[in-house]
Length: 240
Image (cartoon, rainbow, N blue to C red; front, side, top):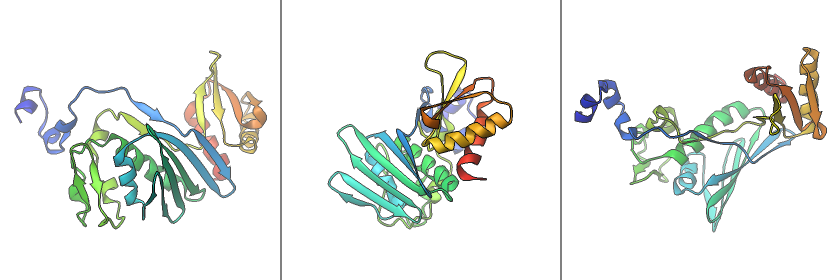
């Protein structure tokens, strides 16, 4: 309370436990998939994540975690997660049905981001009706009592009220500025067929677009809003 008063912090700031993250803001880091595959009715996302004991343990909230030496796997309905533990990183593969992609994206982005950023504050522990969560010095451990109610992911996380250090994204495409400095955005897609569909839709609206690598790379003027590009991409991929 003394720190809060001296620095003009509100009672709400104290009650929500934001004093735990009063360190200076850090630059936000975003982790995108290293690869995305369109396998008919499924999408496969591949990641290379920082090695973290918290990351592997937190996957217990998805389902029955199977670990064999440095390999691990966990399944839940339409989600299949397989990984390999390397010396300095974790190779992760997330496979999901296209029909449930939006819900899977929301769930996995929150789970992976919170796992990598966990500071062991214990703010989520009281949310578990089974008492399956236990705080350690640096993270939160999930025990076998977990019944996958996901209350721990529904409650606010104090790290998300500060500048999140690492954010994991599960987008089936990537939009990035032209590496050569041209006033263009490059759209990287999992397959050329999707690129051809998107290019036709954009051209039908009078938008200039270039197709490269058989449709896997599209170039669009930076004057076209990124949020609109993302909407067209989602509609094309999921036929909404």
